[in-house]
Picture 1 (cartoon, helix red, strand yellow):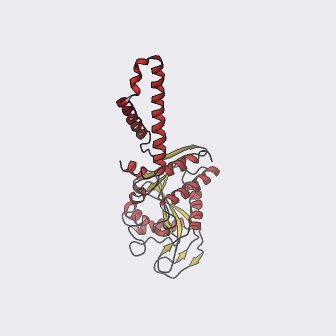
Picture 2 (cartoon, helix red, strand yellow):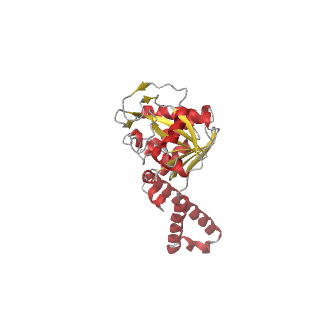
Picture 3 (cartoon, rainbow, N blue to C red):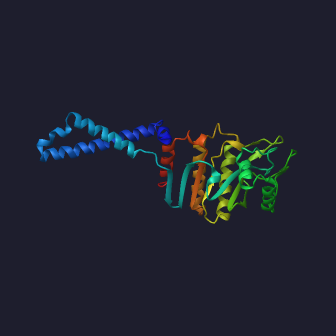
Amino acid sequence: MGELRQDMKTRRFWKNYILKSFAVLGTIVAVIRIMVLFFPARAELLDGISFVVILLSSLAVGLYLNWPNPIQAEYSSPKTKIKIVKGDIFSQSGNIVIGVCNTFDTETPHIIERKSLLGQAIDKLYEGSWKELDKQIGDALVGKVPVSHIEKEGKKEKYEIGTALTVRQGGKKIYLSAYADMDKNNKASSQIETLTKSLFDLWAEVTTKGNGQPVSISPWGGGLSRISGVLPAQDSIRLIILSYMFCSRKEKVADELTIVVPDDQFKKLDRLELQAFLSSLRNS
């Protein structure tokens, strides 16, 4: 019922609901009129209480036809599926994406907050051992050259924004995308332009290392990047989807992309608009 109430706050819902309800009403009335032509004695079917019952039935059927469905779409070119779901990314069965800063700091809680997605990954996948993840990151960074040096607590080597690494833990591949720039006070930030670049670099890494396996990602814009004011979850989701589809049309990225939205963000989404957006990509 929560998702129905969420949909009912949008104009798209009421437009679809009214159109479908009246379409059902028109169909029923047309059928009855045809019956009356052959059976004139049944003309009372369109009178008084009978019509009220027909009207209420049409409204009920219209509600049924507009009942919330999962937000998803399947595509034949490229052959993939995209889903938008509510919940915890760590409960997903496939590989996951985690955004990090370009110094690849991992130390919790002094530098990386435990409530951040990276902090949660350390607690849930590495049993709180940030040093284990740090070792894996060090191995994955072999061959990659830092672009600058910064004097701060923690790691001091900066890598190019968009640098993507793959580590493994708990049967999952974890794609780390350096989409945020870390300053001397260990505060990370980003811009829409760098987020976009990071997404394209991320999908290239997933294409190379993922073997087509399903991948899950959460909306970007909040957390490390600190630009949720100009890139709310609704727009972030569209940006993720577009970048994924563009890359998928060049080369297969994954069989399935799941965008996992935390509860507090999901309730603010225009679900019907997102479904319409996914559907529109079939014809683009």
